[in-house]
Image (cartoon, rainbow, N blue to C red; front, side):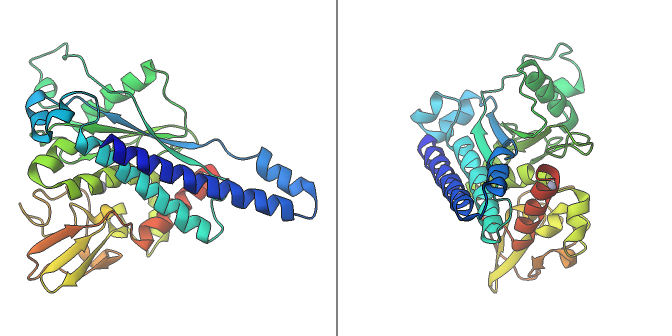
Length: 315
Ligand SMILES: [Zn+2]
């Protein structure tokens, strides 16, 4: 767990170093110093993706062996963090192969543990089964108190609530659903219910949902509409047949690729919009018995996130 995350971090910084080396090379090759200086001096502040571990009850930690009994990052949380890191590595590699986003740094960081105090109104429905809105409100309050709002950050809470049907697999809520906000500033908050994906599905679904709930905050409706005339973020994902009875699902299609019934792909189907005919690629669901998952982003998702970062953070 921490080892996986640490190696992912170092991979990310290698990518970053390579990018800096590439920019340095371009600066040396520039005929005058002005353009090169502007590149170096005007580099935008990094975009931050901060991932916060929530509380995990003892009985849940027991699933993961003695190492998980202490520390804030039991195995599924470490894997969720590493998955988010890998998603941005993919986006930046895609962009830089095309000489895009060369000056933009996206930093995926570990945030401190988030423990919510007991609700002051213990008999309210929200105290027993918090809604997604209620949970995100409390998360945002906590971030404000910690002075963690930067106007260029996505804050992802890893939650352990396997029975919370109101949060489901997670999500984000307007007006804090986009990193760098619709009015030119603002942080996004998102939740990935790792408890639900681990208990009802699998580690592969955990990894994809962590990516999914993060990338929602880097996909605006304008950007999504520009890509293949998509009407929602999920359509940028793909579900590809790898055998007659097997489908492989990418992160943005996860929880949306199967038929809308219990056990159709993931145990629970997402409640957001989806139309398989409109997905970037969808191999259909007839005769599918095996659902597999890949953290590899579809090309449509890579292009969408790249465009979003260009429009919001490079302008
Ligand atoms: Zn979604």
